[in-house]
Image (cartoon, rainbow, N blue to C red; front, side):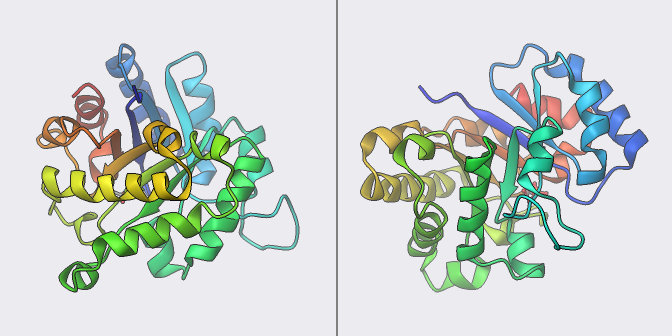
Length: 248
Ligand code: PGA
């Protein structure tokens, strides 16, 4: 059985004091959760978050990272820095990184390998745009994104990776994929993993849905056999909503 994983992607939201406040409110509300709970604040608030989260069941994630350990990369944050700051997960290849910062599948793969090298668990985002959906190439596209992202990842490491299927047209728009449709695309991603590795890896890997998931639709999404969790943006920004999702 795959243990569900629900992660909050805070994006570029929350100051240090707001981070502490939100987490302080959240911790008691999710303490009995039967899922892995992850929050991903901005880089600058990771250390403040780490202090508040110590000794709780809420794990810390980052929203991005560079692939080098150190060096002349102005404005970037390395896997070593994340690891030594108590970060356990890192979101890679989010569609906003792909769209606004021109991240490619190849770059995402390089980052995935670096994250694994440093003992960080990547949450790899894949998903189609509205145009691609209308062209009917959703499943081929996410299969390709998945294959490239996992290039050179061993089967043992692949089992620990998390994938987030996030249709780009559903992110922050209030439009959710239907649960059946998300389930079908996630099944296609799992089949791709079975083809590249084997059934054991495909059965082990956790695949989340993301894109306007909220307290009202999470139960239906989570009732789908292929959906192992959620990557939550807007609805992770208040403790009440995120706790409702975690405790679906
Ligand atoms: P959303 O964002 O829940 O606000 O749609 C999800 C995401 O971008 O990970």
